[in-house]
Amino acid sequence: MLIIGIGWMFVVVVFALGQASAPGGTLLGALLTLVLGLIPLALVIYIALAASRRRRARRASAAADPDRSGHAPGDAVTAKREEA
Image 1 (tube, rainbow, N blue to C red):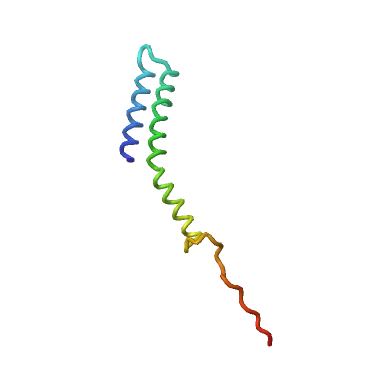
Image 2: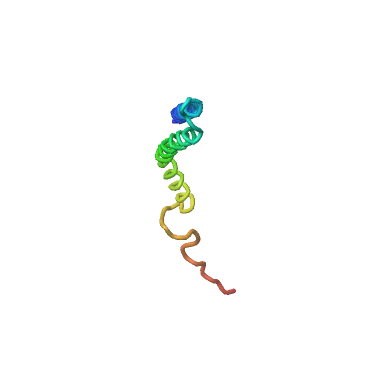
C-alpha cells in the first residue's frame, strides 16, 4: 500500500510541476492540481486503514474488559466481616 501511495504522490507532483512550467500554465493551476490530486489518495488511505483502526479499538476494549462480561472489574462478592 505504501508503494502505491508514493507512486501516486510522485505522479501528482510531476503533473503539478508540468502545469507550473508549461507556457500556458499558472501557479494556481499547479496548486489546484496538487491539492485535487492528493485528496483521492487521502481518501483511499483512510478507507484502507479502517480495518486496522477497528482492530486497535477492539484490542483496547478487550484489554479494559478481559472477561468480556461488561461489568466493572473487582470482587464479585464483598468479603464477609468477621468479628473477633
